[in-house]
Image (cartoon, rainbow, N blue to C red; front, top):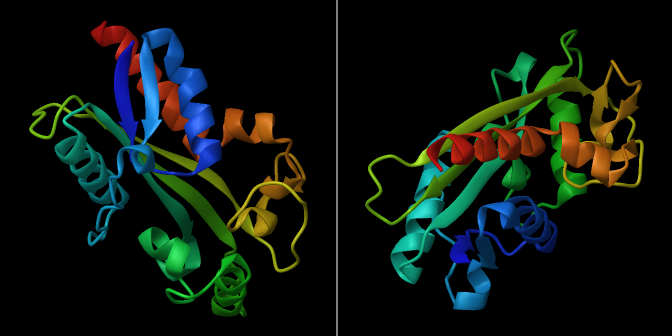
Length: 196
C-alpha cells in the first residue's frame, strides 16, 4: 500500500479517509504521527489553504499528501465567516462562541441561507503540477436555536429544509454521505478512478 499523509490529526477524518481510500491501496497516516506541524493557512480561499496544507505535509514527509479546508458561508454576510469559520470568534473562541457570533451577525437579516464549503486537495509530491482538486457545497439555513447532539462546529445551527432537521440531528453515517466533505471525497475517488 502507498503511504498518504493526511494534513490533519482529527481522528474522525483520519478514520473516514482510511476507509474510503483503502480500496485504492493508500495507507492514510495523520501528519502528527510523522511529527509534521500544522501548516499556516494565510489565504482567503478554501482551495489555496487546502493546497498549502497538502504541499506542506508532502514537503516535510516526502510522501503524497491529502488536505481539506472547509467552513460555513452565510449568504447575507457575503460568505462570512468562510475560511475563518473555526476562529470566527477569535483564536480562543470555541464552537459555541463562533455560533453565537454568527447568529448575532444575522439578526435582522431575512436571508438565512448558508452553505458549507469544502476544498479537498491531493498531491503526489510537493512539486506536483497536477494536484487533484475538488470543491463542493452543502446548502442549508442558519437557525437561532441549536438542535441535535451529533456533528461539530456549526452543525447544530445548520438546518436542512429538505430533511426538516439540522446537520447535528443526522446520524454520523448519513452526514458523511451527504455533507460537503462526503461529496468531496466521492468526487476525489471518481478522479482517482479515472487516473488509475
